Length: 436
Image 1 (cartoon, rainbow, N blue to C red):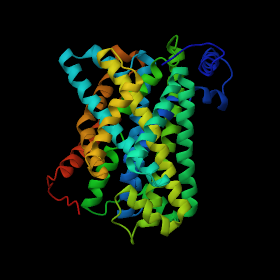
Image 2 (cartoon, rainbow, N blue to C red):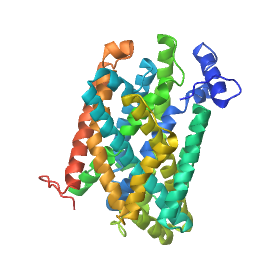
Image 3 (spheres, rainbow, N blue to C red):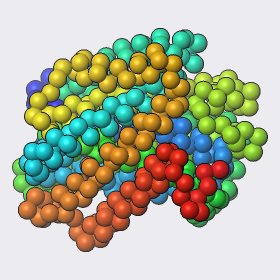
């Protein structure tokens, strides 16, 4: 990203101010805002349209019972995004670049292809989600919603030419709109707050179907492109001159990850709460975004339904922008070159247009995209854990024993749940697990 320090630019002023804090300048809430940005951008991956669909199913089908799963998944996300950010700060390289340095050429090319396919699969879900929201909100044909969404996402991507700060502010604003929409929804929906608190803290699993859905929640939480992207966002944003400065940067980064991912987690929990309050019991079979919108109108009013679509639109647009950024970073890191952003945007949009043009069910396309992500997820997760635990790469910043154990255990759990989700999606029955 652009690291110019011209004091006339927004990015330049932010960089100068960050340097002053690192040099021993005053610290406080305002100085914390200077370091905010990378985790905010990465957090949008945890509020994308795929999360909307999964959380609606969880709330409608099982009420508040799976809130604890959302909370646990968010804690795993915090761990991996924190490790990714630390990798970029300490090494000055992103995860894809380190993979290119550490692995054989055939392995690197294989990882690149898998990661590119994952980025395109992610963008399919995100782009379709934004287009569906715009089409429903403005009563447009889906293809028209896709065209408008494409123009808007490309326009936001152009902010990156002016440095890292304008893009961070743009994505942060969209995240704020999503959060505000769901905050208002909580006042509209008839929420049983005592049940929310109980199920958020006390695990329960009301049947095999809930376990399969839990696998979907956890499996869709740790996103391959977000792991790659976060290390790239921190690698050159502000370079620590020595171990003390890098330690301070890591400390600020960890705090931002906790705050940004906490907001993302609360939004996801709010999705489940809203779906439970509105649909559980009388409309427990709701699984599609369009059906949820049309059902919300008579249940909670047109205002609540419109807020739902506005939040989905902001989610689709912002996550599609972030997905394109991640795709650029993945290509440059693995194979050392990049393509113009308009071409990247065009290539990642084509699958969505093909899906709609062929008349493929949009929801089915989203399911297929999640299957692709299940195949791709092990690549960045395992690589990140391996690199961050190595002292020859991380030095004194290598993972401590507790972090190492937590990361390895979380990787194992997420991969097992992804395998369960994948097998169920492919129709392979597992003993004792009914998808009913």
